[in-house]
Image (cartoon, rainbow, N blue to C red; front, side):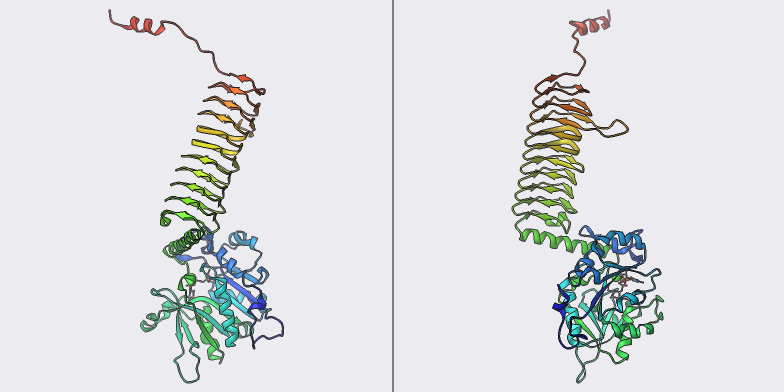
Length: 484
Ligand code: UD1
Ligand code: CA
């Protein structure tokens, strides 16, 4: 969304589009979460709270006009979201939401309007932010706040609207009253302050010095600007969203869990609308950025996380955890697999109980079976490793058969070495392949071999002790033991 799309009518100070900044309040510790992790880095739908707010903000104005105000564990917060290209303002001591804007004043006073978003309310949409700005501009207000009617408003600031009198606008606000300063009658108000505002920057910065710490927390409350601006004869108005879900803040673990659930259920709905079958959505954990193509079936109790991408007509059976992994079309993942940062190509079958560790690349129509672990390994088309096997740092061609219990010995205590198994090779069960080593095209390795030297194309290699047979040995031993 470009700034010019928000540019309305009359109040535009210059003929050109107004200069709009977005400040995101993200400096708080999140005391109520009782956590070492700063509040805005707690995750819902698989991403930090702040990442959602930044994503919404940067769809309204360019990242260059977004200022995340950080403080508690600032370095950690900055590095988690620095890739978004937004600016950062530092609030070294967190003395309240009003104080957060005071410290950002030098950067923000270069703008005509400042939109303030709360870093802990991740479901805000770009559409709502744009509506709030447009309403502010149309009303020629000094401050516009976003509100919502909540069935359970406890903990939120309440909106005290101006009594309707002749000539007064119905949207005019008298004050915002914080929960801990509210009278019993005010606590019954269901219309809450969502913590999102638009300010006309000169009005805000002219009067911000009037904020004081005379409240139960001894903080500078940004919400007090409503009363201060109104007393200065400015317009303070409220715009109520029809969708209260989008303003919910995550202040406690229970609220985090509730928001996480909402985001994930919405994700399941989106996927189902897009043609994906999800048998029992309430049991599935699917991160917000995951993509799934039509006709894929997701059975109960599946987690698909991070940036995973699932192709069409796949079947993900129960109890799989798939993270940052790409499945092509028609892949079957039988129960109990763990897949991380890997690629699985068209028509391959995994599981039950396979573990693909990072940088596994499983070829078309390949089979990876029970208790098979792969790591940094490429497996060619149609190759099979069906049972009890470890394949690490391996290059495996097409049509290869890896027998049960095969181990690539890739680590010598110092470094990792590569095992190469060329097309159509057959590795007998219980073989150990001591890397670096190569098994040539079409070669056979006898069962239980320890292969330490390269095996040429089409050869048979047997690397095991010769079998000895002692005729009658057991019978003689037993009869020697029998009592006379
Ligand atoms: C705030 C509002 C309340 C509103 C609610 C909506 C105030 C005083 N109250 O309460 O009216 O109903 O949001 O969710 O504003 N932060 C800073 N620096 C600080 C303090 C906070 O950056 O010094 C950040 C926090 O990290 C958070 C946001 O500001 O992202 C809101 O602060 P929080 O403490 O969660 O305010 P609430 O108590 O929820
Ligand atoms: Ca909050």
